[in-house]
Image 1: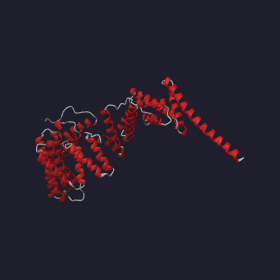
Image 2: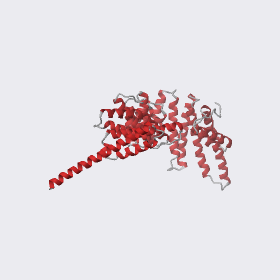
Image 3: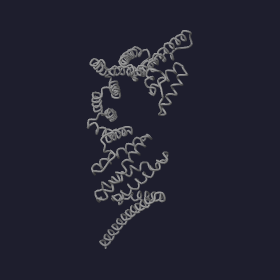
Image 4: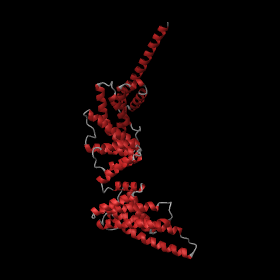
Length: 447
């Protein structure tokens, strides 16, 4: 009797499993039929696409459908149809929103799953490849949209998928939108950058290293690797990258500032000033080296200004020393390249920041006595004289580039401190133009 019951139970289990698999297959096929009906008349059968999505999503909740390459192909086709339809609508109405979060990525993942199924038949793999060829550029388009919306992690997922698609297509000897070596290199770099912006430094390092290992000529790769390795607490690896980058790109400001900040954080600034002075002795005509040394002392000046552990009196001697050394080097750089916007802006910014020391003393001066009021006026006169000195360099920079946002913002502050309402409003208006993505047609000051 027991043998009979066990045999019967086995039959029931087999029938139940077969029934579940049969239902999943039917649901997947039904989704495919709905998609076919939509494809025959997209305008008249829009509801069929909705039906197809509902059915394939339901089918793929079951292990039975998940095991079938055919089911994943249907999902890829359904989601591909959705994103193609919605992007076509955006051509007519740029403000139209996409229904799904990233249907292009969903389609790619489905096609890839079908392609990788060991049981997939040859024609199913070919269908998956065809789907990937079609969806790859759409994945990139959605990734760009995610980036514009500052959804950096989602943009990274899309860009990473475009590179995975490229590898599959390359292995299958099919055309990829990333076949051009420059297009591919750019895509790897932006994928790494998006990973970094999306707080995924482990992923970012893996993509940056693809380019680094090929001997990249991009300073951005070194900068990105350095920052991410620091974020991941790999200080030795970060310093190695930074040193290599500084040697390879000696005049790149981003790596210079990274080096400055690193040495400052380690209290090793003398090493940096020493190396720059050594470089100046070798190349006395290189204006960029003087600017770099000026930047070092300017950073020391700024760091000490912001140090709340010391009093104004304690900081005063070193602040003067750093400011004087920075000014001397900036002025030498300007003597060698008078029309360099950055050099003029840097000196103007330093001179203006020095006026903050005077402003602090003014704020601490008492108005309760005649002596205090007199001292306040003396300080104000001195401060305004220094602001005028800073403005000489800001004005020169503005005459060379009327659309530099940092310079325009600095001029607004300077004219605000001078209480010159007319020029304050003029440069505020000019800065607003640049913020809107437009350009000022001409400079206010003449070179």
